[in-house]
Length: 540
Ligand SMILES: NC(=O)c1ccc[n+]([C@@H]2O[C@H](COP(=O)([O-])OP(=O)(O)OC[C@H]3O[C@@H](n4cnc5c(N)ncnc54)[C@H](O)[C@@H]3O)[C@@H](O)[C@H]2O)c1
Ligand SMILES: O=C(O)C[C@H](O)C(=O)O
Ligand SMILES: [Mn+2]
Image (cartoon, rainbow, N blue to C red; front, side, top):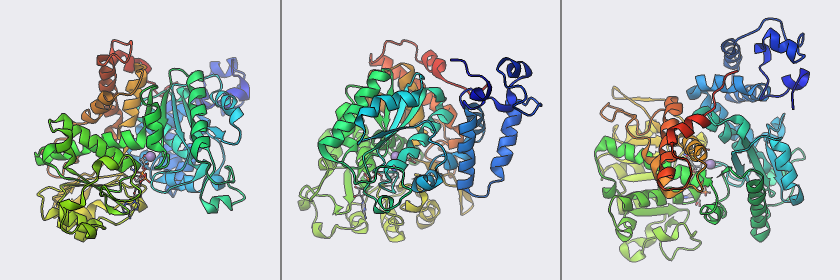
């Protein structure tokens, strides 16, 4: 189909706006529909950046950028690629949390998403076809909106997380925006304020659960697989009781990925390896405490555990290095309401003289002397001065990662952690943080956010059309982020800076694609060529 006239200007994949040349304007019947002066892409970028910079708030900036995306995808990504560091917190986390909470009231445009309702299951195929509009879809990010970041259940409004994650895929790794599709599964919401809001745009009923829910997910996966056989299927922000079940169901059969479990596991392992590179300690000497042992907490724990086993510990030896703390306190084998993912890492009460007192973080830190403390609890401020001072009394370079998002939910602020540990803490946060000055040293704070790794992982997997995403590929991604930061610099970060996201996404992609080849999960033979061939660039 050839687009002409207003149809061309209204197609955001094809629109060049004022950059259409005189010849193109004549040929496509858009002469007179634009101001006469023909701009270059760089001039358009300059003009758009000026407009962006004049907006006062992150939310206003984000709304402007979304409008720009809806107008002209090439211009949007060219601009994004030139300001990755500045735009990430606006296009993505934490500002995305505001637009999710207010989605039904801010709504202007569905941004090419597919909205699938559990009440209209016969429409799944038609909806996916309509939304893809003949495009060859290679990547879907799907959410059911139940566990958005740490802000919980936002029903259909969670669609913005699918949209935002996909934008990062393109900005970071050059995934062709024409090949992606954001999807939301609307199974209802348990958030009373949404159900009571006349303007709420999703299904006005409580979440459907059990077999009906899983059958709906199944039907979506099957239909999407049939329509888009080469697709990489990324699950995002499902609730704690479903995320791991869904991953376990599909991971050995199709090319699929759970960002909160696997992506977070990879980036946190990479951050810990970066920290150990600074402290010159061994992973197998660490004592690991997970504060918050839900989807992300348990996913990370498993990844670090696997890494210890790879470094030579037996499974039984490795397990002794881990402690999980959730709402109930330290998790014991007789604790009620354990999830299947928590069970392998529980402890025995007989290990402690004061087991019954280990119901809060400070008591547990006192009892087990962790060297690594990772927060995925959604509980702000819980890494208190007392907790951190107790931890650092027993370890020279405490590794402390408050990972809960968005900003308002972080377990601690980097500057406090540095102050309380006299600059000794090796820190990574879930959201971007400015460098911190302390005692004459500038401390760069790594961002342990899965966005640093899922784009490269996806690009590499898609480039070779791997059959599945294997543990080996995941492991390769985690080990690809080393060697970028100079660990001998005072105040060095434990992870590479977001400003180099596009560069290290390629390292991750190449490594992952090569690993798929080595594991015979693909018919491709040349990883670098496959990755380079798939990579898209914003240009006319
Ligand atoms: N930085 C990253 O890349 C990244 C990735 C994924 C998730 N996260 C963040 O991690 C947090 C958790 O996400 P999730 O998907 O695992 O959610 P989840 O709901 O699956 O897990 C949260 C866990 O915290 C526990 N919890 C609640 N209150 C607690 C308390 N007072 N003490 C101890 N534990 C408590 C819950 O019981 C649950 O097990 C969110 O804030 C999310 O933004 C960050
Ligand atoms: O979206 C993010 O910023 C990271 C992560 O997937 C989360 O759920 O918090
Ligand atoms: Mn997430």
